[in-house]
Amino acid sequence: MNLNCAILHADGEVVRKLEEYIGKVPFLSLCGTYDNPLEALKDYYEMKVEIYFIGICASEEGGVGGMDFSRMLSLPTRVIFVADTDLYAAECFRLDALDYLAGDFDFSVFLQAVSKATRWFAFQLAPVMEKEKKTDVDLPQALYVRTDSRIMKLMFKEIRYIEALGDYVKIYTQTDARSIMILCSMKCMEERLPEEEFIRVHRSFIVCKNCIDTISANNVVVDGKEIPIGNAYREQVKRYVARLSVL
Image (cartoon, rainbow, N blue to C red; front, side, top):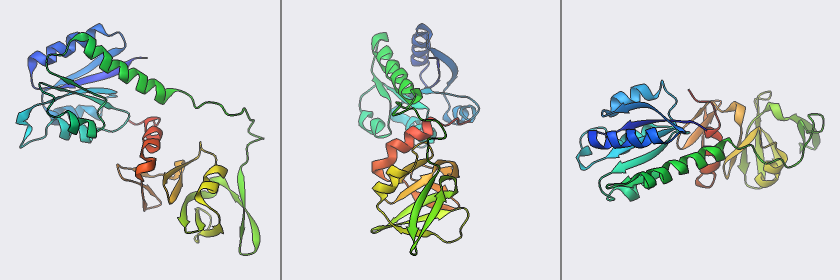
């Protein structure tokens, strides 16, 4: 595994140290060094950076600082913060930092941090464990639902998203302007839908992955409707996003 990395730090001595350490690690490739967050952000959208080493200093007030910059990055990019004190550690980990290097850290500490990155990316790329090998013929392609005293065949590919409503669920499709309401729990519905095509993003919402138009920190948008991401489902949404090929 080879991981592209970049450095954003205003201290030249720290930058040289990071460059030296990166050069010693065969699975790291340095693709940029910056002391200006805005310049780094401009290039970030043109490069595939998996690990960002970001400096934190007390003089960040009044501009775009390292923590501000980290909030602009998206998965699968992970951040390792570098600071001369552990004062900011708690706040950085609240920003989902991969690690935090403080003070005069040595190469062994650096290596431990980047090793976490390899484990994280390896986990994201690992194939989902096979439950059972099934052919396409064996896989169900539709649900049969009871609605309005009739049984209706509903193809998976027609479903846009599903919303919980008490003891019922409302199924929104691309072929019917109206939603289809059936007596069913979200748990039962989630178990019946193929996990490679659908994802539960909230206790009240399951969405078709191919129908998601945009994804932000707190919601996904399907057909113009903003659907919230629940805290209990945030990690699985992150894992889904991490597997996307984002330019």
